[in-house]
Image (cartoon, rainbow, N blue to C red; front, side):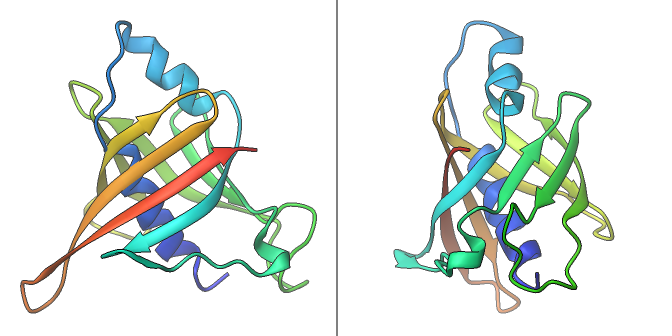
Amino acid sequence: MKNILFYVFIFTSLLLSSCTTDSSNVKKDLLTAHPWREVSDRVDGFEQHNSSPCSADDMYIFRSDYGFAFDEGATRCQVTSPQSIELGTWAFNTDESRVLLYLTGFATPSDGYLTTLTENTLVITFTIVHADGSTSIEVVTYEKY
């Protein structure tokens, strides 16, 4: 549960990556067609993904009403954790090359490039700016759940 916001940030980065489509509804339809399961989270090339068995069925849900949620799936890591959490809302930028995640409690949205968005794969790339001004690149990969 404590890593949820971290994964949300990563997921947001992946959604803002570039992807080419002909119709403005195609990307929205692909993103909202089903839940997404995180399979990789790399920061500057180093894997960060939580591969514990209780996280294997966790999913991120982008709804067509622009709501964004996290669901623990059938197996929760802690029985006292809520099954689902409304994380906030999402939007595309004007040319739909980026996804913006407006997370509840945060003043500015998480912003990521849609590197890949297909029926089965979602990849979002985030640029993380640290307090000292240095940056890291985070690439989060999701699969259709």
